[in-house]
Image 1: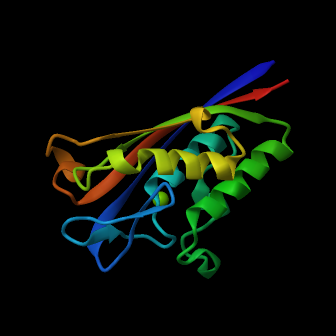
Image 2 (image 1 turned 90 degrees about the vertical axis):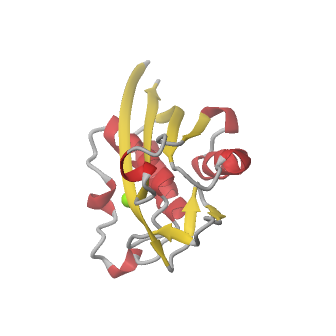
Length: 161
Ligand code: MG
């Protein structure tokens, strides 16, 4: 069996007038902020996709879903994730697990973690215990701490029989 590991990172700006979608869940920020971006700006799903692509040296999501392509405007990132997983499977690889950490000062993500894990696992054809989603604040430090944005780090492990 061959194993491959991949790493993904993403950050999007917090702005007024945009939805806040993380792990496919629509959340409410206390100040009404949401994530800016061409697609739904779901940083968690974007970081997971980049980890999957990175594991196979397939580039990054910008290569497959260019931000200047009108086709992806407002796109549901979970649908894009399905396409990335299909790409991985087409090449004969299986996902062993993914793990992630979202860095956000507010809102509190803990009540939504299970729903995020379930949504991501479903779209990837995995059991929820193969999908780790964690959340932390940045202790008010840096862009996440100042609520200028929300970021996410993810890793993915793939196997080939
Ligand atoms: Mg992104």
